[in-house]
Image (cartoon, rainbow, N blue to C red; front, side, top):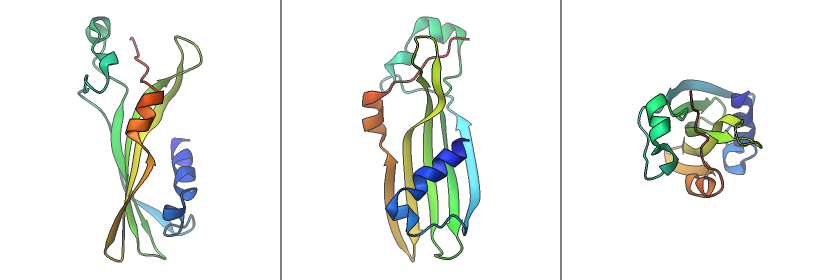
Length: 134
């Protein structure tokens, strides 16, 4: 489901859509790992004694997709950062893998370009992570 949403975001971006076609794109590599450490200056919510006592997992992930297109010859590394986002109610998770940073590094004919699909600074102003208490 998340990959479908991710591809929809890619194809709705004109800079990516001109080089990557749905019929000729291929996934070359993929990696998504849970974050082992958290930056408490960026995420002060995790500097919490109760949460730290019961949890060692933030539910946040960092990873990448590497795509190649057969027609254009372009390659793209899509860098992903996710976090659990809160839902409508106090104790409800709205989205467990909410994209808070999404950047595409595209190389085509020797030219490098970075396309920001989701800006981390703008997203974190509006949405903060949901802390799981297990």
